[in-house]
Structure formats: C-alpha cells, structure tokens
Image (cartoon, rainbow, N blue to C red; front, side, top):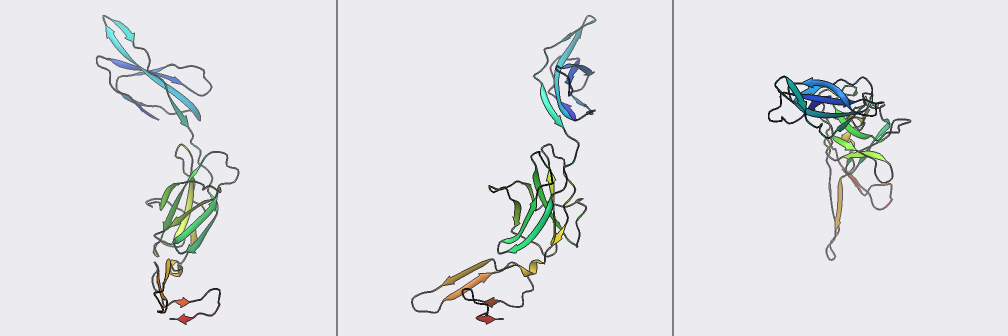
Length: 223
C-alpha cells in the first residue's frame, strides 16, 4: 500500500502509526523523513494509519498530535470467473448475459471484453467494452454492445471485487455479427398511397432482406 500526506512546515520527520487486523488501537510503526512510504500487509483485513510530525531542538524530540486515522481494506484474493455467458443477436446489437460466480457473497461488478479470433483467455492490451456492470432491477447480469465489430466478435466477462481484484475471464463465446437482425423498422402511409417500409442494419455482407407480414412464414418479398 502506498501512503502519502502533505508536508508540515518545520517538521524534521514523521511518525507513522498503524493498526493491523486483530489489534484494538494504533501503535507507533515507523519514522520516515519523506512524505510518502509503502507498507506491505501481512494478512488481509482492515488496516488503520495515522501520521504525526516530529520536531527536534536542543537534543529533544517532540511529536504532534496524530492525524485522524484512515482505513484501508486489503484483499488479495481474485473472485472466481462469471459463468453461463450467452450471446444473442438483437436489433440493438449483441446482448450478453451471464451469471455470478457460484457461492459469491461479496458485492461484485463486471467488465465485458471482446477481441478478434476464436478464444479470449488473455486480457493484456484489451480495452473493455464496458466496466462497472451491475445487476438490473430483476437481478439479471448483462450488457448490450450497441456497436459490435465483426473483426472482434469473441466475448468474455470478468468479475471485479470492491478493491479492484479482477477474476480470470469467463468462458469465451463467438457470434457472427453479419447475422444481426434489422436494427430499426419503420412503416409510413399517407392518404391512400401504399405503405412505405424502411429499415436499417448495422452488419455487413448482406445479400438481401426478406419482408414478412404479421406472423406469416412465407416472405412477401425476397432479395
């Protein structure tokens, strides 16, 4: 952990106080001359720190009142990976759904990734599609990628705990986004003129479209 504080005019050094998990009060830990120091926790839990300035004169040393304590929670354990990732083509893009890791009791957020190829096991250099994803009002976990990329069609998701530890990626899934449904569909009719039908699509390499009326299984047109 990196600790820092503002300098105190006239201070010769600083006294750092620390309280580790299991202790009930702060105790003198170390003296430092700079305004920064690092501490390596020996166990997980809540650590408390305070700092006091030290002045010296005539061979005597005096300490100021310690600052208010700050608390830091350490947690080096990574969450387990999310499970049951699924991808679905919808008009708005690609909808990813997944479940929380089994047996999870802590609060987690989720990060969705995508990349080229057919697998996704290494997150190095990847820019997330979205961070800080949390469950919706029905406790469902998911996200809609509204700008899918046909060259980055492999998706995976990670879990992130409250102190920033990130899980390994979930099982990766691939989806051919050239098969995206029509994104928008509009029907206009003026007076007695035939209806005008317009639509948009975000994919590429489309050979044609088929138009259906109501729940008919035979298209009105093709091409």
